[in-house]
Image (tube, rainbow, N blue to C red; front, top):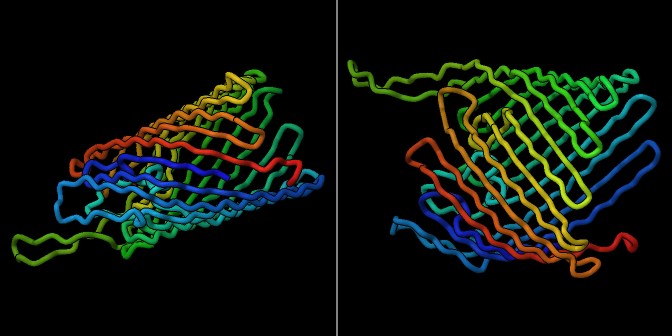
Length: 388
């Protein structure tokens, strides 16, 4: 169980209509696990609730109504199950997740929160994910893994666009040596939004790379390739006035085909008292903005345990997102960094403090750039395993 009190001076990370928010969040979870030599199952349920006791609106618009604290209250849950069964040279697995969260928690990492012309409180985001996998040990050196995934996102606010996202990939691994493993991955996906004018985007790509265990403490995983992107705007368009007739004329958007680089890289290092991980990722990801988006990110995380009960964590990320097509551009650059200190003052109890800084900038001048700061303190309790 976790109890956390936080203050955020710009919840939506916007230049105008800034909202400061403070409140208490409670979260608890339970986990069940069952294992046999062939079967492995794990189910986890997390329940949470946030209640706010302070809200402040900073705006140049005198007509905007000051929001209530309760406008930003929310409840959340996350139920996920992971089941795998192994026999001979095969492994079959399925992962499922149903989740409800607040847009306050999800949208900075998705399409951003800029451009709000009115003050909106918290709204629910319902997500369902189903992901079956199949692994096959072809030979002593070769392994094949196929993963399918279906993801459905449903937003209660009409500011966001519901979508369905389907993806498939097959990765071939080849053990070149004891420490080097080659990998080749064909992949494909389809994005479908649920707007009045639908947009469908298909992607097909091929990536290749290497996994290199440099030593017992350092591992490098690199993958890169090219992905083709095809977008069907489903008859969407806009009206212009014909200067000769003075009548409106509908201009239909042309379907698009383009390509881009996709890939990922991860370098990790672990010691007993400290470790770090550096990641880069270039991909096409589903978005609540109504389009598949180019998604480029780089991150760095570091942990340090100078004493047995004391731990420090640092997490940073920078990135850029943009719509995958050329008709509607919505380029956004963003960054965030957080530092956290936690101390175990009893066998099952931890206390922690955290600071996070976020900023984002839109190419469109009307949205501009903004930043925000969050301060939080919390206490955590976990039941000892010997009584579970």
